[in-house]
Image 1: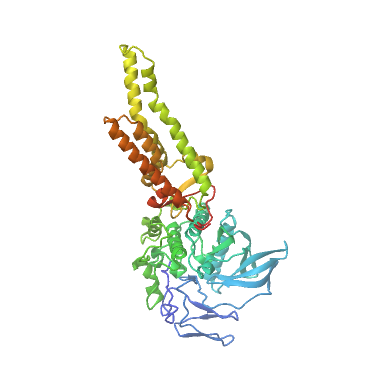
Image 2: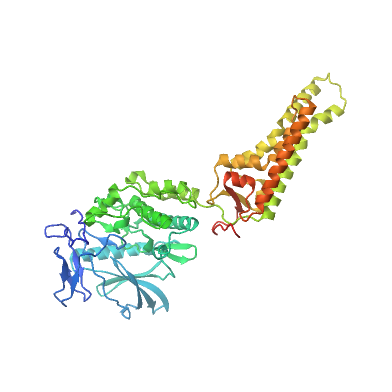
Length: 530
């Protein structure tokens, strides 16, 4: 197989000269194909149309194919009003390097669909490539996943291949990016849906090959579907058929002549998620030729913001760095591993809990702990009141055990802190369906959860201190108890005061940067003013 040809659209395609391996073809709107010989313009011998080639920028979002495949540089005319089989093309929705997409009426079922008309060349190799695309469209049609665009029909009208897919309301995420980056919770939801779709496609033997925001389409307020499997491959093929994809999203190994794989899809996903997070790509392609621009992926360092955005957890940076690793083996081994990390950095709760609900949950937790205190401190005094003979060895052993139990009164708040350290809900939070999250909606680290619990239950610590048998004078114990009572009352009063602020955050929330949210809501954005 001949090595791939890299096309330079910004400098008169100087890589596509005679003797090179790839065939570059300009398709005139009249339908004729004009070989490109490296000049500054293409002149159609059929209709005489002259099209300038210099300045065509394919390095951003337009999909290209090179190698032994004809590369169509022009945008064909609008074919709205024409009919392909039982599909009537009504409106041009978009077009790219592999074809044009129309809103069409399926006259047999009387429903609207999206019809993609694949571009074809006149060479035998182009016919083979079109057949490969149709075969892989058939493979995509076997995918049954809520996050994959459904293919209804694959066929030809004469020599013209096309496929019909479900028509989605949109918009694409490329369109949404014009208004700025997505909210973190929305972006993570998108990431998990796309990875789920890619995992399903891989299990069916498909590699997508062209992941980018314009191929991610809204099918609902919170649902995304992955479309345009036009550059997909069946399996991790080692056969190199040239560079295929969108330059800004091509993995370094592909720009060096490697073959599409699961890891190259992950890289394109990393560029896409970086763009959805920050509103720009991790680096801009630079250089005089497209070959130089593509080499940017192999050499450029990731351009993270100098000041990390407050609304995005630092853990997200680790995920992006791994997805965008230069070497394929440094990326995720499979989509299951990636999904595990995405769940780790996903907001687990978002809607702030009400003040009354939080107070009830805390009251339940405090009452349960108070009910446990007598179990530790009463048995020994009760045994002393019984006036039993102390010479009995069994009674002496029991007395020592009850004294140890009295010393273990601190076990109560420690147990509550251990519950939170393990990530389990306390009884009060479980009863009222609440959970503790950090400022990004993520679960706080275990150490933070435990320390927060100790401050939240400071009243129980003070009670345990009061009944703890300290070897000090009664006067000193009374002073310490009074001082501890004062501290506890002040802390609870300050917490109550902060709870009536708009953000509803108690003192322990402010100190540990946490908030209490409803455990039943995983999606709505945090609104501190609500």
